[in-house]
Amino acid sequence: MQCIANTLFFNSFVYMKYLITFLLLLIGNITFSQNTFSYLGTLLLSNKTSISFSLELIEQKGVVNGYSITNIGLEDETKSEISGLYFKSDKSFQLQETQILSTKSEAAINTFCYINMTLSFKGKFGSKRLEGDFTGNFLDSTQCASGKIILMEKKKLEKKISKIKKKIEKQIEEEKLDSTQILQTQILKDGDDFTINWESNKLKLFIWDANKEDGDKIQLTINGNIILDDFETKNKRKKIKYKLQDEENIIEIKATNLGNSPPNTSRIELVDSKTKYPIITQLTLEKSAIIKVIK
Image (tube, rainbow, N blue to C red; front, side, top):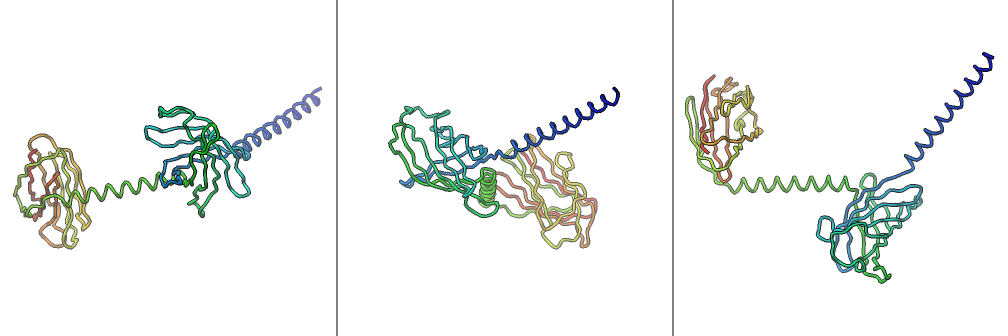
């Protein structure tokens, strides 16, 4: 009896082992046979106008479902259901909009143009695009549009847009700085102080060694808070932003060493909304200069 019980237990164990393996393989096949596509771009109409357009697709065994969005972010933004086929042999899609899922437009439903499209992958390596032709039809099958579709993978396009945006913002900031008034350079030595009347709520401060780097180190304190401690100035400018308190703000620059070529020399530039204040400090060891900013 014990032998039979052991045999039954062994057979049950083997059966469960194969069953679990089969289920894992089945789940793996279901998971990996499904592909998702997220693309963003434009519809180029034959009349030379363009419409923003995106596709979110799920492909499984050649069958494609998903949705499209036209006029993204505009008052006529419309989301439509997509269905179609994917042909692995030539890596192409045949897709059509089948119904309106949601829209911000107040136009009658029979005035909507439903798109039929043929798309294929273009480009090498990681820079694949989806491109192709489309036609649009009303519900009564009358043609309402035609043209080309150019789409890029959404993540890559958003990354490109982000880079361009940062570049533009940087140019605007530089142009803004270039348009500010630059005053005469102030030279501050041991115990000197300099007072500035300030307009904005924030302080933008640049500090660097404008001459040969010789190991000069400074301590920068604003309103009693140590911002830079034993900081070695370099030819590359160090940028600091600070939110000012009402009325008086005290900036102290202190020499913590003399470097290889005394005195300790730093170049400082304070930038208000419309004015640049250039300053040079020339300090001996453990001595300070004060800048008072009055808001």
